[in-house]
Image 1 (tube, rainbow, N blue to C red):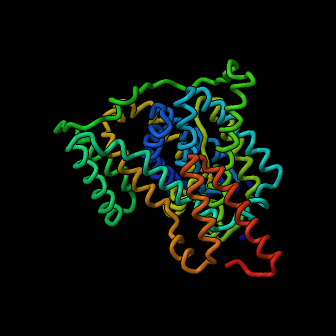
Image 2: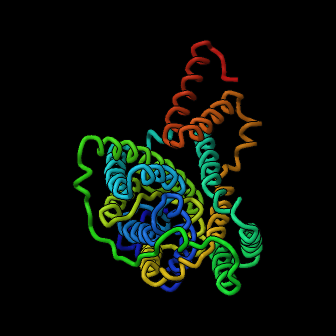
Image 3: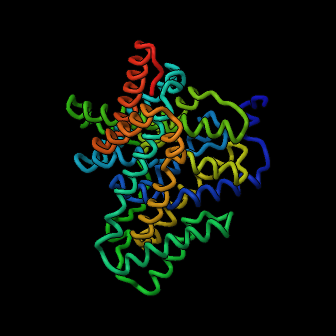
Amino acid sequence: MERLSYKQQWRGDVAQNILAGILMGLALLPVSIAFSFIVHISPTVGLMSCGLMMLFISLLGERISMVSGPSSGISIVGAPLVEQYNVHYLIMSTIVMGIILIIFGLCRIDKILHHIPDTVVIGFMNALGILLLTTQIKYIFGITTATYYVAIATFLIIYLSSKLIRLIPAPLIAIIVLTVVSYLIKPNVQLVHDLAQIRLTLPKPSVYTELLNAHALSIIMLYALTMAIISVVQTNLTNDMMDTITQSESNKDREVMGQGLANVLVGLLGGYGSSALVGQSKFNFKMGATTRLATLITGMFLLSCVVILGPIVGLIPMAVLASVLITISLNTFDRRTFKHLREAPITHGIVMMITMILILMSHNLAIGVVIGTLIYYGIHFIFKKKGRQSI
């Protein structure tokens, strides 16, 4: 397929791309709000971060139609940072993460990523699904009987609407229906405003100079590097998927640099880190997003929601958001797992399990990827030296 110029990447069916952009914005609404609670920040900051990222990536990204925003991996890493210190550390880590991503792109990180074995990627995705699942259990179990009913209703609505309705995202339907029902019948359940203040404030450019000391910088650098590794792995996986479904290729190093610059700008405006999103990117393409206009509209739509939806967001039952994230966590599990365990050499299964255990024990996705990859190649080096195939 012939490569389009930057100007041509904006041209296409305007009405179709505007509709796709709005639909993508609706699909990102529930996950942006839900991820905010994982990372212990206001839902409005989560919406703002996602909106800004989509706005900047529409201008700076390499791959048309690819969706970027706060992800489960980066949110899980950012949660202990906000808990132990404060949100300022997360914002500064986002800025530094963006700089690291730019450096990664300049250093041709795509060549290195090709050496991460599939067995490590599968372990990474499965551990991510488990970590995401465990963060949401507390919002459903041991609260009230009504909470269980709301959770069950959420799963049923998501399942049925995903089969019957194509244009409107199933999680959004569940949120709308159950928020209205909850408002009308007032069940004994936790709502978003019970756990977080919904402040409608516009972002202000900020660099927290009080954090620029040796101790704070060491913490920020550690988390920023971890977030950057997660972002580059998830972005590369998404890029590979988009290459397949669009039957075209893009420059992955330029995409990583675009993601990096966008994250720097998001951080400077008070948002937190993002990466490309696999499922949402596939949905965006299927909805007819063929130009940069679609992702621009998504960003503008989400930013408008920060101002418009604040009071409504506070009325959403927490059990609904938790159930939405549980369905996402289940979809995060790599479907190749059991086939891989059956068909691959036993050493591959061991490496996959080691990767998962390292991530689950440390709650650090980057450690699992790096050490899992080193173990994989270490095992193969040993077998090669002995003149045997891995078993």
